[in-house]
Image 1 (cartoon, rainbow, N blue to C red):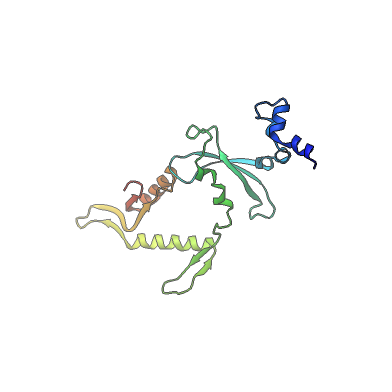
Image 2 (image 1 turned 45 degrees about the vertical axis):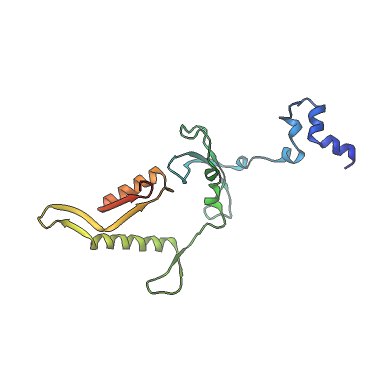
Length: 196
């Protein structure tokens, strides 16, 4: 590339000599940027979602495309704010804008580590086995702590064997569902860290 070619490729030269005097269009575009396409072009469909980070409930558009190498044959291509949302009007905070890494990040765990009682080593378990173990333990704790009536025969129908402490990283919908779940199980100690 000669000096004259280099000068002609310079954005300021293109801005001063071309029709784009303000440098907002073609003058500002490099050859590399002209060749690029948005990641959303390859998307097969768009799913609606809600940002998982706080209780604001910013709406997101999740662009999904086919990928034969992925576990379910699809992969997330891009996550953007949803302009139709009355809550966020298409805007996302820095954490919400980076929420794609929650799904696609290399650091995401896809196995469960379990250390049995009195064990010294961790064991890898599949997710289904781990979920069954959690469900069995919840039901056992509920059964052991169940109080049908008090000393005077009044109905209590509760358990003191289970408690819940929610966190501010959950959104309103998740906290609502957790409250309903633990209430249905008969738990009475239900609290949220965001209230304390």
